[in-house]
Image 1 (cartoon, rainbow, N blue to C red):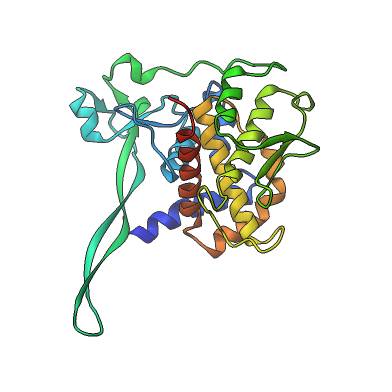
Image 2 (cartoon, rainbow, N blue to C red):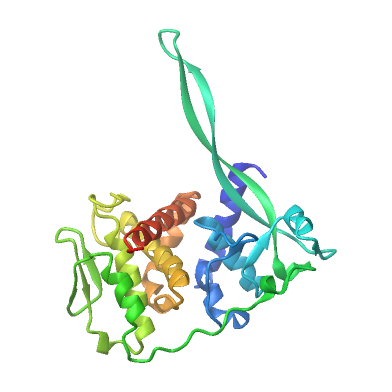
Length: 292
């Protein structure tokens, strides 16, 4: 599949969902068949997919009713002494790579540069495959409700980032002071919502120049650059929620951003790939801050 078709296909899907008031990357949490704990999609060898592939596979699993976390190529299924059922349709994922190009400079000298491009390949969910071991078909157990009690494990996870988090009137991250403000824990209707909102703000926190130095062109509140950063934080929070076993921030919190996200994605068909990449880098950075 040509590279521009890959960008266009996923962007068109997300635009269509946004037009209906839906967030593609939230579907796994809204689907009955995935009412249990939502986690990252996995390759056959337990290595998780990342970036935009996470969005692609979550959306496909929700739409097609696949309950397994595992995905693999036709050949990988055969190598595992299994087979894809006749008539099953695969899902395309992407792999970013580079190639070296030689170019002649003004003075006749040869220069080389790395040119990025996307490769596509097709994978199938374990639910489409017969003959795999039982582990590939296991459905995650429903997440337990922590109620109003603080979760010690999650408290430690966020504390180890060393982010400056203080109690205030609203949830926000302010780059000029490099501080995260969170409402009192008791003001949330569940512990899960508190940590989900904190995951969103901690993703914003990674953009600081002394961390990932992420600048998406924000000039003022509500402009395109602001919307882009909010989309990165939304995706980052979803990725982090999947890693930590909690549901992300309630979708209605982002209703105000939907129209702006629509415009941003219409103006730049590749931005969803860029946003997913930024979100993935943010989550990976947060994980590096955890003590072994």
